[in-house]
Figure (cartoon, rainbow, N blue to C red):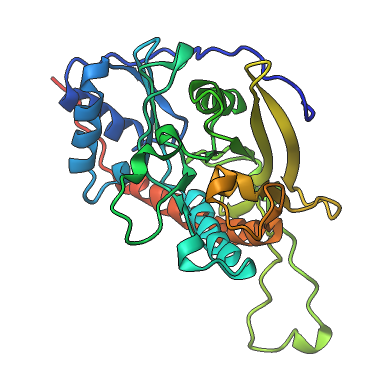
Length: 355
């Protein structure tokens, strides 16, 4: 797909679970994410139970990764899509976003009175229109308009309650489902959300807690040992590890080779349809790939809210090298998280068969 392409018409083909109560829905979520599966879970839930379900998940989140859930409610089908974002790769993106926010403030010399936007990783959005009406959505990250510090006005009504920019990160999540998220933001807000950034991860091979015959072939070779070191008591040097996977532990491929691309989508008000502005490869690294950019207008929403010294088209850069560094630092944490999961699975006693 190239810049300018219009997103195809896609529909969710998953078979939703059918919980009869809120407690049953929460139990389904906990059981689903205690397995190796990381794909979003789909369940059918009536609109009037949405708030109760989210509140129940928050109450049940103490000591459990339910606190990292992201929700999408499709008002047309009654399907609630729950995405678990507990991986270190999601945490790495949040760190990257926080650092970038601080860099923008420093690089552009923004005074406190000029910081009328914020980068957030929480927040439930409703009020969608058209085919997305009665829907609700929680983005992985958002750039939202805010009022200057000390203002008594309600900033939730700014930009119609929609984020200026929404970010959706897909790890073990299909690209097609990311496109559905993008359409909800751009079409459902009628362009009030100015841009949607999609970040899609792929892992080869996909993680499994089961031993893999491919593990030995993926294990990096030991570097040659100098003759003078053969009789030394020093242990042999560790084999070099690819910075972006795979990571092999024994017979397990705990992290496959990671590939990532990023897309920026916008809304064509004339055609009333989303279009792809740019497609950028993050991994594997292409030295010719530039940093991705938003504009000052994307951050402020309107020229009236923008400081006079800026133009609407002034670019704000997001460093791909900084994001790659966060990904690289997150992979050992992901490997350790999965190693612990494998150990727990080994220690888990088998349930006695019911008589």
